[in-house]
Image (cartoon, rainbow, N blue to C red; front, side):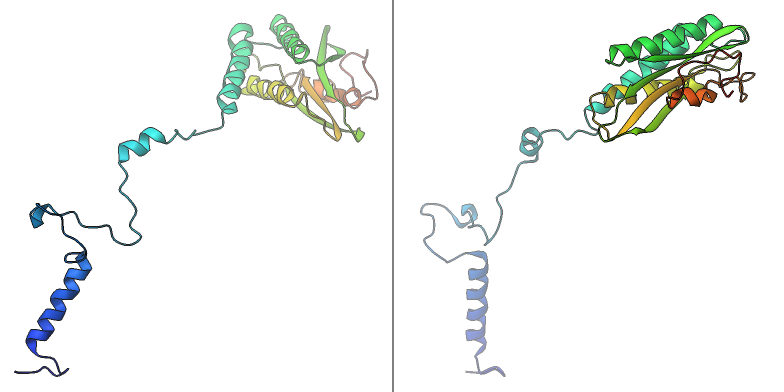
Length: 231
């Protein structure tokens, strides 16, 4: 009988290959199912093989993953509602030709602060014969109360505009920050301020509401000088 270079006959080598393949696929190992043709035999699972999982079962049993935190839609709705009030329900607001709207927006901001549990303070001064005001809500600091962080936005609009982006959106953000932080205990004092008279022609050092900074940081509560809170 002929032998290969490795010392085995072709017949022996062929038998070894058949045995190896049979072991690899699990045929010929262990008892065979009685009464079933080989075409219907079920092969045993390979080592470390994971059982098959139906895709529908995974989709049905796995909870849907949120695309954003639950608080975000609520915040978005709140911001939208506040902008809608200032822009659509109140509209233009300035001392030049929409002073009634300016007063309505100030009342809305003050009422919003009160609804959150704040006790807002009005810092008033006179400008062009009108009594105008900044509205301030304070959250006292727990450790460094004398250090004050001012968070502000102006609530008047430019002449001829309802001021959605300038600055109803800023006022909405101011109010929502106050609402979200009202129960916090910050180390420093926070003052949420809605300023008046940022738009022209009142955007000057003697007429803009932000120039009442002396009042905002607590050095005085009011000023009676016409359009001159700096004095």
